[in-house]
Amino acid sequence: MNINSQTLISDIVTENYETAAIFKKYKVDFCCNGNRTLFELSEDSDIDLKSLIDEVESIVKRKTVDYDYTDWDIDFLSDYIYQNHHRYIERQIPEIKSYLEKICRVHGEKHPELFEIDKLFSKSAGDLVLHMKKEELILFPYIKKIAKSSRSASKLETPSFISVENPIKMMHEEHNDEGERFREIAKLSNDYTPPKSACSSYKIAFKLLQEFEEDLHKHIHLENNILFKKAIVQEEQLNTIQ
View 1: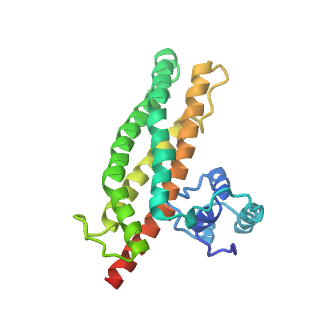
View 2: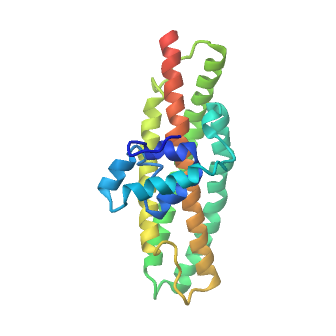
C-alpha cells in the first residue's frame, strides 16, 4: 500500500489493523471518523504529516497481519463479528458493571467522577445490546442474503427497508454515539489511569473498561469500513444486473 498525504485513515487501518495503535496514540477516531485523509488530519490537529506517514509506513512494512478481513465474504465476516465481538460485549457488560458498582460504593465520595463513568457505561451497555440485536435479527441476515445472491448470481429480494444503506445509516449513527460516550469515559478516567492509592478492584475496573473500548473500536472498524462498504457495493452490483 502506498501511503501518502491523500490516503484515507480508514483505508490504512483496513489494510493493516496494527496501524490502529498509531491513531489511538494521537487520539484519532479511525472507526467512526476514518473517512479523512492524512493531510486533512494533520490540518485539523497538531500532528506533523511527515512524521505520521513515517510511523504508518514503519508498521505497514512489517507485514505481520494475521487476517486480511477485506478478503473475507461478507456473510463470513458478519459471523466473525458476532462470534468475536458481540459475544465479547455480552460477556463483559455484567462483569464491568459489577466492578463499577463496587468502586462507586467504596470510592465514590472521594472520586465522584466514578458515578458519571458508571452512568455512561450503563447507558452504553443498554444501547449496545439493542444495537447488536438489530444487527443480528435484521441487518446481518440480509447481508447473508446479499452474499448468497452474489455467489449464485440469483435474484436478490427487495427488503422492507428498501436498501441495505438504510439500516447501515442507522448503525453508523449509533456507532458515533458509542464513540462519543467512550471518549467521555476515557476523559473522566484520565485515559483509564487509576489513582496511585487505587485498590485492586479500581485497577481491574479501569483495565476492563480500556479493553472494552479497544475491542469496540475494532468491532466498529470492521463494520463501518469493511463489512458495510462491501455490502453496499455488492447490493448495488446485484441490482444493476437484475
